[in-house]
Image (tube, rainbow, N blue to C red; front, side):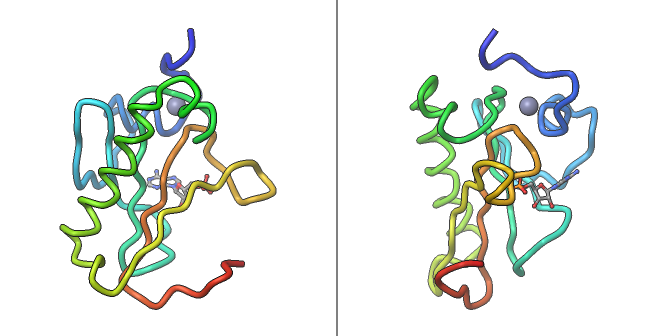
Length: 119
Ligand code: AMP
Ligand code: ZN
């Protein structure tokens, strides 16, 4: 069924607690944890507890949860004090854009200058 946990999904395992992560915040619908390979001084992943392969499919099925991800991104940016200088929220979608984990997730990046356009 859409949204159900997938046995072979790393982020479903983090939601279930069977794979450890450095969790910074959790809500009823989301979990946020530090990226294991940070690309900026602050690099946090914000994921829905439900499994959808990417941001577009999540938003089509559960727009409220997609909004939860964005709300959490803003609140965590303030908590991490990266909101003053500026931060970026990224949804890599598809292998050609660098997506490697096919469970929707937002990257929250900040704490350094961020170039535009990204590579
Ligand atoms: P993406 O490449 O957009 O699919 O993002 C996946 C992200 O997950 C990458 O930035 C990885 O560094 C990160 N990642 C992979 N495994 C883990 C893990 N066990 N804990 C935290 N972050 C992870
Ligand atoms: Zn999953």
